[in-house]
Length: 294
Image (tube, rainbow, N blue to C red; front, side, top):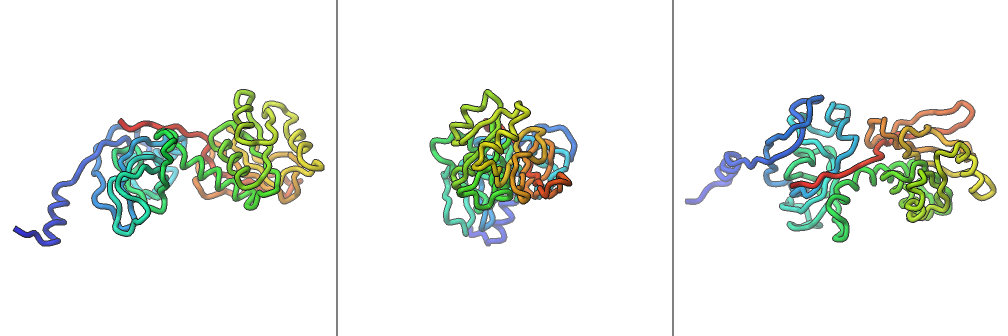
């Protein structure tokens, strides 16, 4: 017996896989276990990933209450970042194959969120997971890394040869901002708590100041050549001030990554001081952890 293409499609629809997930039935509802339709065959540009670990961040609460439009409505598996193994690829995908270990931040969602057994992602939003990186680390990397990259580009698109301030460098986003600025040729003055100072120095920061010291802005300014201040500042400190007083030029820009802002990744421009022509950008996303799929 030979089935037509239409009959094959009908049979596929009749046998829909189900998957376990954690998410919500309605915006604002409590997170609970869900059983949802598993992904079918991927679209030409898509990849289906068997989730090994998924990131958990404060942005997931924003999604839960409906404050961040991620492209899907409940019933919805939460989670916007994950790492896992490719189980199928679309016909146009050439750079990934079944069995590849990958990580992704696939927003807007094509199917469901990352707190599920399987996840659909556009191939353009997928990167290979280095073999030496644990699953949990890879899963919690995409959002903080993209946030740090956006913030740095906003305040110092060409940091080579420039001095950059990273306020709150002891956190995930701040630490990544330090490393990105240095990798792009910048010199970094960082602030961090005493328990994080040695780690931040290990990232390559030229100077690490204790942000508990009320004099740190003046110390940061004095540490720059001729006391001219920094060209830009990334503020990843929890509840940190919107703009620094590090003596930068009137065009100095500060990027803010506070936990209280709910915009990812679009920036929010604002004027902060009447006496300075400074501005700030809110990119949010300063902490992340991961949950291992079982």
